[in-house]
Image 1 (cartoon, rainbow, N blue to C red):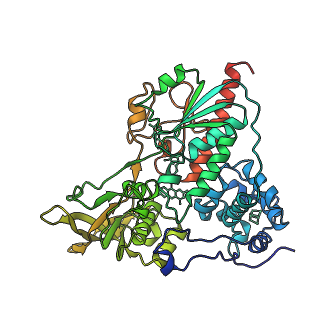
Image 2 (cartoon, rainbow, N blue to C red):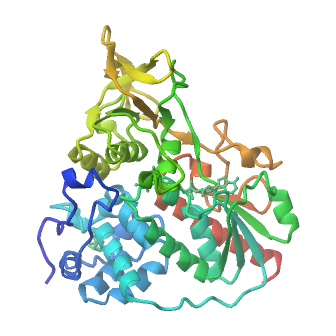
Image 3 (tube, protein in one colour):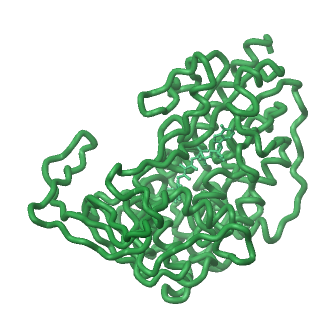
Length: 466
Ligand code: FAD
Ligand code: SF4
């Protein structure tokens, strides 16, 4: 008999006024008893609508049935058949718009907590099981991957399972992409990311760090070294600015730089690390996505007394995950919605002193279908702040496209691919993730890595008459 409670089993969390002063994980995870109780809410639907909502087709009812039976190790193995990064996805995927949105239990109550169960299973496995991962027999064919974010790692892992010799070339000194340099420790502990990357390596993937493709080697040079295909998963790490006066003042950061200093360079441990990050007592973060929430919550944890999120539309249009927005509000982040900056103000020494804004109203829908914000007359006002963090979007770095002849890209820099295969305009070069879509999500990047791995396998088999 399923558990017919309309509500998810709650997940314990650090209290808001405690957690907004530390970088430890906010959500504390289910106990085995909680996980079994929640798993018993699943109806094991024959038509599996939840699976259709997952870009990597995790076998959701199958793994949840195993959790309900207390078979946690087998549940992990079931997830791992299609998802190389379950501890990551269980924490950061927007389940509310994917698998959980499709869950039939959501019709008359809350959906099954698929993400929390995935997280539980991955954490339980890491804590309790030390099994050697068996490498598939090698097939003698080489594939190169550019970038070690979720797109690259997934493509690499799938190809290694099929026997390919896969090398990832990563620009940074550490693998993981945004999982290590963007998403903060309090949402995604880096030790877990490392464990999941180690599992991908154990499948036979080699990761070469400090390899900036386009500088150290080009894609053509990689192909000349005997790689039969290349997958570009180089992300969208180039920050956008508003082009308003004052953006070059001291105390203005891009969210990318701010978060990279904190996460990758561990600035929050300063002086026990080399990279400090200077933060004022009052901070404005401009933008309304996950990145903005992460920057605001990090600023609070670094000691800022007042942190504002400044966003030009209303709560209904806010692109951040509902959970991140809710957590940010609980942590005392002040939401200045329907507000748009027009100028950053500074003192005679060039340091930020405030941000001038106007109030906005929502007009007719624009091309994105969202109501266009329009300026409210005579609404100019100044918010005194000492730090401004710009978080209004990113685009792909031009390095790959400017060093790869024959690679077609969109005007804004995204690589153009065949959606069914991930193949680019250049023969045997594939791409996926943020490098193609612009800033999106971990699971969409993983889905793109998977699609490309299948297409690369097919192409190499056909080429070699296998
Ligand atoms: P990335 O993760 O960006 O990885 C690209 C990798 O390629 C990087 O390691 C980069 O160093 C490397 N690279 C770039 N150029 C080169 C080169 N020339 N040579 C070699 N290597 C190169 N998504 C969610 O689903 N949920 C969230 O909660 C969430 N929160 C986020 C919070 C922040 C702060 C940010 C920035 C993003 C967040 N996202 C979230 C988005 C998500 O992280 C990305 O969509 C995802 O990481 C994209 O994966 P990717 O593999 O395409 O690229
Ligand atoms: Fe279980 Fe919900 Fe999927 Fe049905 S839709 S199998 S209840 S998780």
